[in-house]
Amino acid sequence: MAKTIKKPAVKKEAAKKTAVVKKEAEPIVAQPPRGMKDILPTDQPYWDQVRRVTEKLSREYGFSRIDTPLAEFSNLFNRSIGEGTDIIEKELYSFVTKGGDKIALRPEMTAGIARAFIQHGMSVLSKPVKLFSTGPVYRYDRPQEGRYREFYQVNYDAFGEQDPILDAQMIQVAARVVQNLGIKAIQIQVNSIGCPVCRKEYKDLLVSYLESKANKLCIDCKRRLDANPLRVLDCKEDKCSQVAASAPQSVDHLCEECRVHFKSLLEYLDELDLPYTINPRLVRGLDYYTKTVFEIWSGSEEGRKSALGGGGRYDNLVKLLGGEATPAIGFGLGVERLIIEMKRVQAKPYKAPKPKVFLAQLGELAKKKSLRLFSELEKNGILVAESFGRGSLNSQLRVANRLGVEMTLILGQKEALDKTVIIKNMTTGEQETVSMDKLVDLVKKKLKTDNVVTYHENHN
Image (cartoon, rainbow, N blue to C red; front, side, top):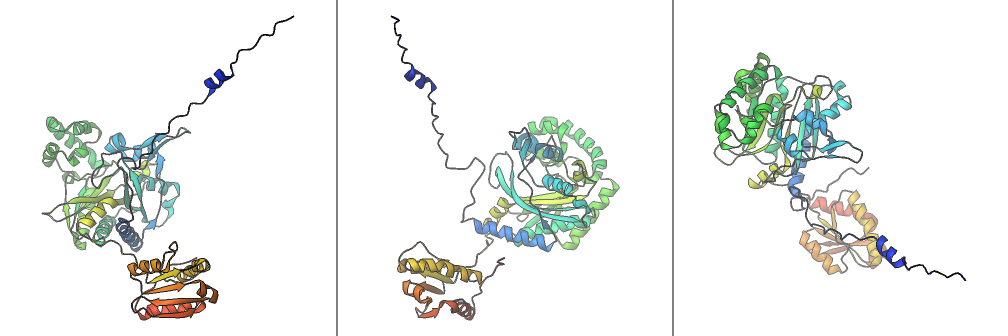
């Protein structure tokens, strides 16, 4: 008789071996990454003011809105901004996608706008093609006041015109934006860095001078001697600033075309009575600039000064990116820096219109009817406040008092059934009951009598 061999009990062991080990979840850090921030409701009036002023001026000066992606192919920035710049070498947020594409978050807006100009055939449009854009940009830089890793810019760009009158107009727009935000004391710094023809000779002369002072330069500037010598002039290190003070100046080595262009620009600025100074050390940090460069600074000669933005010509950028040769000029302003300066000089933020009418409701049926009533008032341009979640009438009236409204509309169970509303004058305490179908016209009449302006936006 054959022996029955019992199989070893391996079920439990196998189960243990195949059991999935659960990873302990990483704790959520209750803050954004370093150098990025939330824009809280308390700060939004300043942001609203910047949005309103910049968009209004863009329309007045004939700019059309364009929005480009936050992410572009990395080589767009490598080619336009320049391999030897700090932005590309140190500050670019770049990554490879799952599909193998090399992508970067935009460190500035102009390259993406120039790419869109080429891609969408804007060169056939009447010149100049003026484009306005705004949004976040990203640089992996050391965070400091007014300089974050995610920060916001407003950009104004114009393509297709090489006359220096456009340079003057762009500088005028930049000055108008800053002053219309309430930052009255400004300085405009201008320079010309020439074109590729005259800049080659100037760069050779500059490198020769800087090499003779190489032992006095910081490590970064010694590296820049080969890759980007003009940036040495812009270095903030004291020892480099001292060397730059005696360096050859680009305005002394311009070709005839660039010299005439710069001279004409200065004459236009004089005509506009804009407060400018020629800064021979002003070069900007991007390779694509040619001829005119400028920056807008806040503050008087004696007091505290801070850079709010800048720009210049980039006549070769469109061709460099594969388009037709197209002269262009543009500038960007840092929104955070503008807001810091607005607060410093106590410039007024945007003041949203306050509601003069409060809608209070009591009871389930009244609550249902109040939503439709609120919608009717809003569609007729009457700004209404409410506190739908509050149950008691007294708590809702306290909210109405705190808001300082002119009148409160009270809808209770009885009113909901009768299709009426009680209008309570919050100053005198007087009340009257009116039919729902006459309410909108009566409220408008009362607000007009009290010189309260209703608002209205398009409802399509």
